[in-house]
Image 1 (tube, helix red, strand yellow):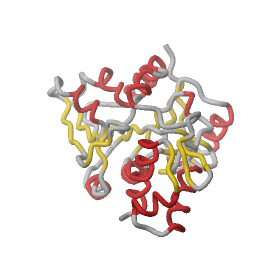
Image 2 (cartoon, rainbow, N blue to C red):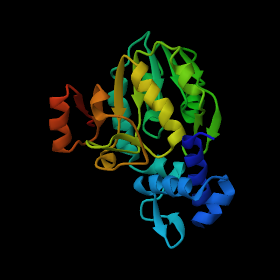
Image 3 (cartoon, helix red, strand yellow):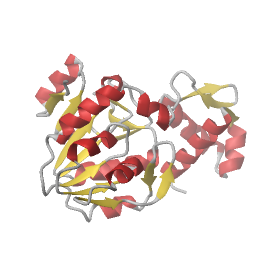
Length: 252
């Protein structure tokens, strides 16, 4: 089993039970204790889990927020960010829309345009159904209920076949040191490939995402062309200037 897939399954297993022992994980996933220790350390470094005696548990202060709760959180800011991002979309573009509760808000602001859209965002697909001018291609794969998105180890190869002009991507958290990060390893492979394949990359994050690092880094911050948020800390503005990243503040 690929490590990224195993990390996803271990993460899900711990979240369902709240706390598990290392021995239980060894038996469940049929790998050595050293492998489990390394996997657990990776999860702990991501910030959603903590060590307990003989095992690991969910860190309730930073645990993965359910999708429906994330939809509600900072909703107005997300709408403003989506609107600002949509201003960069032009008729004829081939765009990628990432999974996330901010990127899905873009539907309302691009629904009148003639576009080809590649996406793993289930909610975006549903909201785009009434608009025949939006040609939507799904990445397909397994439904990841934590993010309402499609995930698959095969998606990377699929993405390379598309000539994406603009990618609108989301993140669990960003830091200058760790770059653009995500909580689910299996999603990170797709995000990383999209960043490499797209002509331009737009990162959509609300202000709560700064100075937070999730489990996996899928690209460095200097691989982003546009940083769009409702508010951006000064050190990120300075970093953006040094690395030719255009900063966009979403305003009312």
